[in-house]
Length: 516
Image: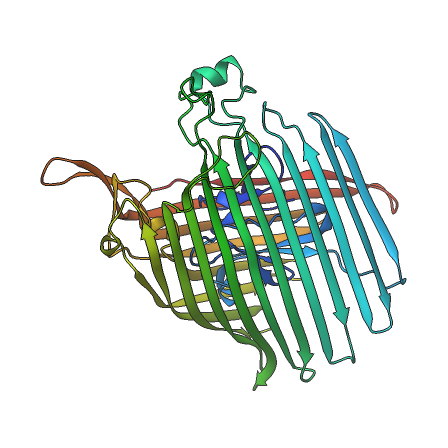
């Protein structure tokens, strides 16, 4: 999927293939939360300001291509350090009323997978719909997974100027978590399990409605209204690997499990206008727009669950140890203008300005509410500029600089235990990406070599502290800055034997990154 992206780091968190964890340039790959992740232009991050991970899991059989936008161009979409990661799905078949596709597979460890899609066009309407199902016993003991996903896309084009698109995506899976292992346990048998009663279940819906309107030959408008709705559920015996999950001889039952639920209610409306124009001999393209977000992350954690062994979110006591809301209201305006100063040289400055606020409320049974930050403001401008110089038809030099931002999120301000304390004056992380490179294509050889620097200020972490009475605690605060410098290289060679066959050498992506 990402073989042609130098320096990309991708891993499968649980071995089930349910979730893509991805990063570039030394960023945190956890569920891609350093990216603005989109599907057909629609945001899929669960809550950009509360929990920016993307729990939505699109079946890759539905994907036609993946786009990665960094630099000034990414400021149109968000403030993330990683840029914008865009999954473009397969589109309706325009040659027939009904087309069918079915992809089926069987594999090791009980893997069974099926993907089935229909698509077609009738008059001014076109559609694409799919259903995906995958089950597996997993490589480790007690690591079963049961995944299903559905998607539906409907286009309506009443005339050549207007196009309306309604889309609904859903992903759901239940993964049995086999539990942690110590080093000695892993050396003895990496497939063994320490848990058989732990489960994880994100059930996510992504509805959207898009209006594309061609105002003129030079001016186009796109308005996307979307939401991320659903829940991230887990039920676990959450203890270290050396604590066995066994029946208590006194009660003849297991210890009650911990139930945690995050309810996502994230709404976005985004208006984008592009316009091409000329000033004298300079040809330019302006993209500008407005984004409004209204999110409510309802977090319910530390619930006392059952002693059962199946996936069961039932509470045996009605109250939660943590029952909180994290509500965000945010408005962003953005603009980017590409100035074609000559046939070979273009310059593209951009800006994004955000203004918003996150309010936290609720209760934590083991912590006094007044010791927590309850209001976090998001007000900042981000600037960027890109330059491109063409060397003939297929080669160019490029350089760019763009600022980035990561807000303080829910987990940063909620103490995990009574031994944690939170800095009430936490600051959002900020920094920049800078790069320059040379890419081209000649005689079947493609290459892209670049230098980059990523600066990440106000990183969050924990410090070991003691109070006046000598009691130990962990103090969560901004602990410092980091700078990542690197070289990225991509090389691919394709040699045609004839007009009917060709030989391709696999692309070589390479990144070298010292970090300070």
